[in-house]
Length: 520
Image (tube, rainbow, N blue to C red; front, side, top):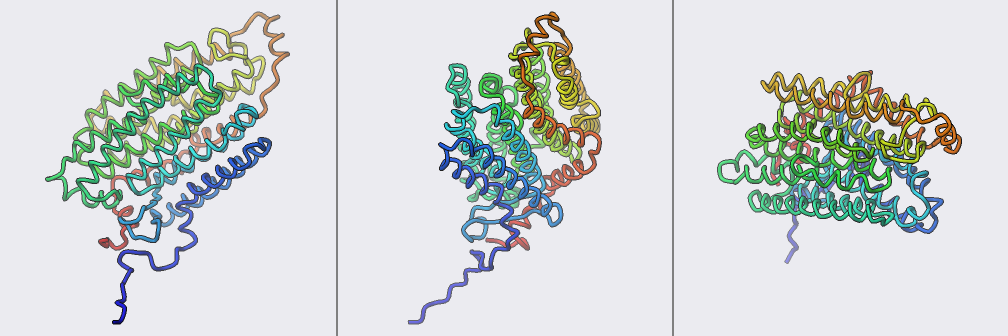
């Protein structure tokens, strides 16, 4: 009996994969490979920094290539195992995911350079750089996955690796902060998993493009609002939104400052990204119904966060509350859901990744110069280093949303979008947050930079402190894009507009995953 010929073209990719498509998974694959290499040479700590910086530079180059291709040709897709979606696990890079992956890799590269001074040989041998690369693989996978269950998997990857980074050193304070961090993140990921299981039971698929195109048909029969609320709570906890943000200020001040810089710059943005992806692209109707609740959560997060910063006397604790406040600003655009509001949120995410990383590294350099993180004792840094005073001023202006730095334009967009949407109180909350941030960070600047010690004491301290050259180089590398975004924002705004349009009008994303609208 002759064997029957089976046509696999409707279920599997039968054509060779174009070389350019590998760019979609390169930002995930390269960190995994480099992390494995670093584990193999874990006893050769002198090689770690060079391998890590080289690996991140290669990853950064692939991110640049991927974003360029996305902007030129639209969303790029690759499905694992040659199975067509929704059967295969899909990676889908659109303007939002590709741009955030690029900015995150940029700041990770700078942190790897700074870590040469901040992480001693013992910390390297116990896995700082492998943990860092595993975390970046999880972050890149979260930004580029097209499958919501695999979003959960990549969340677990970077949470586990970030836990390793958090306890590196094993001091009592680190273990205490790591315990709070782990428990609260466990609650968040459990909610995420429950919501995803519920979603699969309703839709029978976990592919985001497939869910997006089926959502309208399911709206009359499926409990869509329940799903939206569960995801809002789970991702809100990951993003450190009020009232589930108390884990962040309890933990971000405990690790090495370069680890805190990675966390403050990148990790909360993954939670914000997930909220944008799920609520705007998959559940837009439910997001609109929840917009009032999200707006109040955004206002409470941004205002209470910065009020918390005003009450702190430890520089690292101040920065933890500033991170929370920035999350509230980004949630404002999610609440509005308009093209301009989402553009402001995405542009603010670019700014926040750069500026918050720079702010934490600035704190590290201040500690090197002054020997403490206490605002009661840290002073006189202008006379020790006029350069650090200039860099600190630029970074403070950026975080406060003042010209000529990067924080101005996203707040302009969000304030205008709030007024246009008939929510002047939300625009007032954004402006009030900017004022309070200026006061909080202005106080830090005055106390640490301008306040002077007694001349004899100050001179003795200055003579004994070496100038932190690696810290200066790291800050300058971040100050350049921060200033560029403030002085020449048009290219960044165009990318943010493209990303926002891709969320609101997901037809290009769906078409890239399912060409010609084909059914599986």
